[in-house]
Structures are given as structure tokens and as C-alpha cells.
Length: 500
Length: 72
Image (tube, rainbow over all chains, first blue to last red):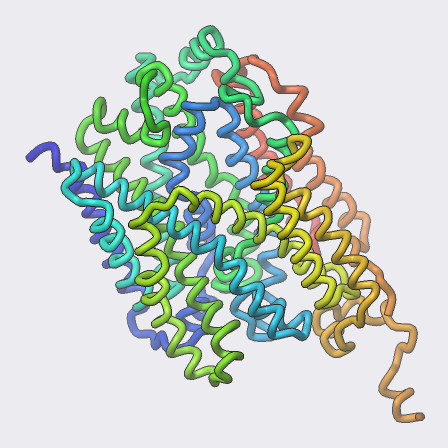
């Protein structure tokens, strides 16, 4: 019976998440995109801090980062750096996106692209193509959640049951409470992750060294496997160029999920405060990376590096600690997949189906939250159960594409002369180059494929924009009110028009 | 229509942009090769210590820019 205590702790976490998430939307009518999609823009800075922080930290924290430390060493730290820099992006763009969305009633990134470039087609295309990466990410997290349930139940829960169990739990509170549920559950999951990560890290350190200092661990690493202390790492695949460009492409990737989370803030100030402190959340990764280094000596023959922390917990730690790690890992997986499901449903409804079927806002609002079921049932669940080897490739393409949307966002906030043709052809060229340099000639000169794609994308974006007709003056005035006087030769067109 | 890019308009704005660029360089190509060695600082590999430093430097930089109003 005792061996099932970790499993019971893990399941208890799911029950708590359902209760918290379900009750988050109590007393609210969720059949509008504004309420279900962005929680009526009501979240304060603490909630925003945990929402964005937990959403950014996936099952990677408890599985991938110790796994990378175990197999490569310090290259695992690039994630700490890029997540920290993504805090700068949230801090700069978050309040601007929030203000724009509030003023012009955008709830998604694609809606803002549609409005800025006066093209529903471009917005719909952006929605569909960026959703590939987002859904692939949700699938990876769901697979991770099912894996944890399988391990914690000692094989009692097969993968397919784990997939339906984790998606079923998410669907209950996501359908009922929308972004509010994500906010509340992510707050809980974020807090749990912070505590569990440091607890496990310090516990493992004490067990391995007899104290709480990391120094003996790294002195041994330096003596036995010094290549794990520097780039390019134990596998020799992360040189300085690849480290730098991997960080940059990740920072330039502004996800639909981030955009929608920013929209949920109660004010510009609220998101600014949260994002200012956001980098501190990512300290959560450090102890788990240390656990991966300890695993090198404890499990020299471990077949799957991603399981190093779980293995260590199950073998060496008290059942309650192992259960907490199971709950923390499940929390990390679910807190990352639920914003993806939510954002995809919201964007498909508002940016693709509403213009396609000419729905009014009430119809789109009703359909929005119902779309989570076909997305989970027909896309995420079957692919998660199949666990296709190509999923990582789909994810890579997705990442590459999301980064390629960056110039379109530049055109929204920094460059009024940007046009829909420039954005489209830049994105198209960037995507092709990213795919080519991801799979056919991988990362030439050690530079990330996405950065090659983004460089060409930016060049095409600028050249094509200069050759094509800009958006109407009305749109430019709305997006760049402080620049209008300097942009046009005729300073008062309405007077001139009347004179003619 | 002119093809002007939106740039910072004040000295504080340019200073803030400069700070952000310095923070980003701290974790990338110009600085990483300088610390890419086996030194242990504060009980951690120097790259790990730098990552923790970057977390705090970024946070303090954002706090500073908020205070001076450099990102309007």
C-alpha cells in the first residue's frame, strides 16, 4: 500500500486543481470571448506573476532540464537565460498589447495582426500556422503528464488512460472558468513547483554530499567529466554560437498563449509589476539542474536521461517527497498545456471561424469554450497516445514559425510603413528557410535555423513593405498616434480634401 | 508616407535601451566565451553562477527603468 502513497499525492493534486479551477469562474457567465478568453481582464500582479511564470515552466523543469544536465552538463542553463529574457519581452510588450487590446477589443495576437494589417486572411493564417507549434507543445506536455501518472502508479495507469485523465481534469475547469481557471490553477501549480523544486534539489544535495553546498558535486564533475562544466557540453552539440542564437530565437518567439495571458491583467501596471519580477521565477530551474548533475554519478547507466529526477525520487527519497515531485511534474505539464488548449480554441473561434462563417460575437462566444473538446479529443489525445517520433520535429517547425511572426509584431509597434504583403512574404520566406535549415542542412555555421529564417524574413519584410501600399491612415493613426504628424507630408488631409 | 522607425525619444529612453542590450549581451556571444571555463564560483560552475546573476541583474534593470520612466 505504501508504494502507492506517491501516486495518491499526485492524484490529490489533480483533485485540488479541479476544485480551484472550477470555482474560479463561479458566478460568471462564460459564454463570451471576453469573459472566458481573457477573464474580463481582472488579474492582479501576483496572479499574473504565477500565471506567466508557471505557464513558461513546463514539464521540462522536472524532466528535461535534469535530463540535459545529466547528458550534456551546463548547456541546460540556456533555458534559464532565455526564460529570463522572455521576462523582458513580457515587461515591454505586455502593457502595450494590453492597452491596444482593451482599446480596440482584441483578445488574440491574430486579431491584432488582422486589425493592424487590415487583412482577415493574414490574421487567420497566423492563427492556424502558429497553432501547429502550440498544439505540438500541448501534446508533448500531455505525453509528459501521462508518463508521470504511469510511473507514479507503478504502471497501473497506462499511457492512454493517463492522457484522458489529465485532459479530462483540464477540460472540467477550463470549460467552466476559462482564463480565470488557468490563472488560479497556475498560481497553485507555480507555488507548488517553486517549493518542490528547491525541496528536491536540496534533499538530493544533502543525500549526495552530506551538506547543502553544491560545491562538492561540481568539484567532482570538474575532476571526472570536465567537459560537462563548459560549452559545448558533454555531447559537444552546444557551442557559443548555438547557445546565443537559441536564446535569441526563443526570445523573439511571442506565443499566442503569452499574448492572451497578458490580456488577462487587470491593468497595464499590473502586468508591468508582474513582468518586472518574472525572471526571479525561473530560479526554479537551478535546483533541478543540480539534481541532473548528481544523477550522473548515481545512475551512470540510466537509459532515458529525462527520467533521472523521478528515478532518484522513487529510489531514494521518502514516499511523500517522491509524491510531491510527481505532483510538481504533473503541475508543470498541465500548467503548460492548458494555456495552449485555451489559446487555440479562442483563436480558432475568433480569428478563423467567426470571419469564415460570419458569426456574430454571441455565437463566437458560445462556440469558443466548446471548441476545447474537439481540440483535445481529435488532435491532442490521439497524437499523445501514438507518441509519434516526429512530434519533436513538428515542435521544432512550430518554434521556427512562431519566431517568424516577430517582424509582423515589429510592424505593429515600431514600423508604421510595414504592410500586409511585407508581413506575409517575410513570414513565408522565413518559414521556408527555418524548415530547410532545421532538417536538410541543420543549423549552418552553428547558428540556429530560426535565426537564419528570421534574418531573411526581416529583409523581405522591409523590402516588400517599401514596395507595397501601406495600411490606411486611419489604421496608422490608431496604432501610432504619436508618430502621425511626422509620417505624412500632408499634415491636415481632411482640410485639403474639402478644399479640392 | 515616410518609412520612419519608432525610436526612443528621450535620453532616458536611449539609456534604458542600452541597459537592456547590455543585459542581453551578458548572457550571449560577447560575454559567454569569456566565462566558458571550469571555474567554480559560489559553489557552482561559472556559467550557472552567471545564469543566476543574469536573473537578478535583469530584474534590477527592469526595476531601474520603471523608476526612471525609460520605457514609455
